[in-house]
Amino acid sequence: MQSLVNFLNNKPGKLLVAGGFLFVSSEIVYELYLWLRKAPKPKPKSCEVFFVNRRKLLHPLPSPQEFLFEHINRIVQYIDRAERSICLAMYIFTVREISEAVIRAKQKRSVVVRVVTCESMVGNEDIKVQYKYKSEHLMHHKFCLLDTEWYCGSCLIAYHIAEYGEPTKHMQHTLFDKAVLSDRAGLLERFGSSCARCQKTKSRTKSKRRPQGPNSRGEVDPLPEHGLLIAGSSNWTSPGLITHWDNMTYTSLPDMIDPFTAEFQRMWYEFNDPLDKAILKEPLYRDRKFK
Ligand SMILES: *[C@@H]1O[C@H](CO)[C@@H](O)[C@H](O)[C@H]1NC(C)=O
Ligand SMILES: *[C@@H]1O[C@H](CO)[C@@H](O)[C@H](O)[C@H]1NC(C)=O
Ligand SMILES: [Zn+2]
Image 1 (cartoon, rainbow, N blue to C red):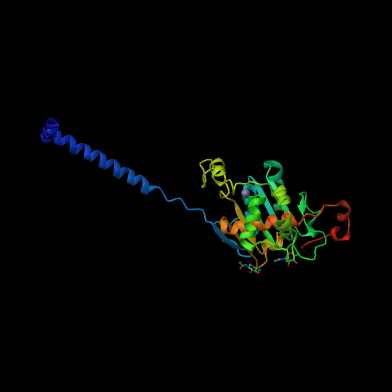
Image 2: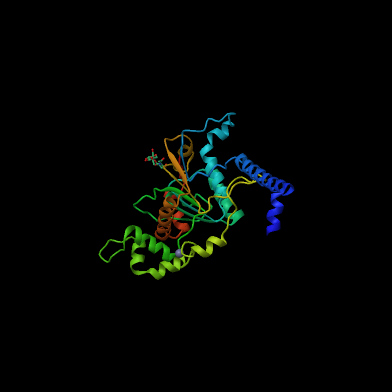
């Protein structure tokens, strides 16, 4: 010990200490420089709002086609990124580019596609849809969930009871509430009894997705980890997505995704009328034209 102190006190020892200090501090400065130089990665937005007849005035100008179809193209691009599921609740849905993207997701990437729609849409698409036959009430929703986490039966029941209360005998019940009241086994059978939501710890580590942000090969980003909600006032028709005064919100906020997912599943339960070929021949479905 004494000899070490002696050594550090003489000239070469002091030089060595000073040199070492200089080396370490220059390393720190260099690392700091590298860290500062790295441009901060833009955080993906958790919510974006678009207005249908308001388009981005980009320079250089995009082609007239791209300019006109900005909102349609955005929907197609998001649907093309779905890897697990598409849940679509759409009143009127006639845009061919979007239905092709949905079919592509189902056929090429084995994405689970569920569509709830107004009965007037039945028979128009190649995709199985669920609807209510001659319902007095419009399925007027216009929203789409991409890669969101499906509720299992138990989680769905728990969600609805927590948000809306427990149904009692004396209420007028919809089919779903009736099932919550007296056929929970049926709901579990329909929706399963475990899901990523109740198995959170297990699945979170398992279902690791690629990190956000563009990668060097120019591949498209994956969707947000817990999915995306597209909701707004637009029918998915050309005027609804090109010229009307309409708005659309794209969001990955769980506080918005969860209620829409739970509501979609309630509809999925309620809108379950059989697709009868004979019914499709009725006048309502023949020669229908939508603007
Ligand atoms: C959606 O389409 C239906 C049928 O064409 C129409 O009656 C309704 O007004 C449309 N809704 C919006 C918000 O464009
Ligand atoms: C979006 O536009 C529709 C139709 O103009 C309107 O009814 C609705 O309130 C708007 N939504 C929001 C969040 O402002
Ligand atoms: Zn669950």
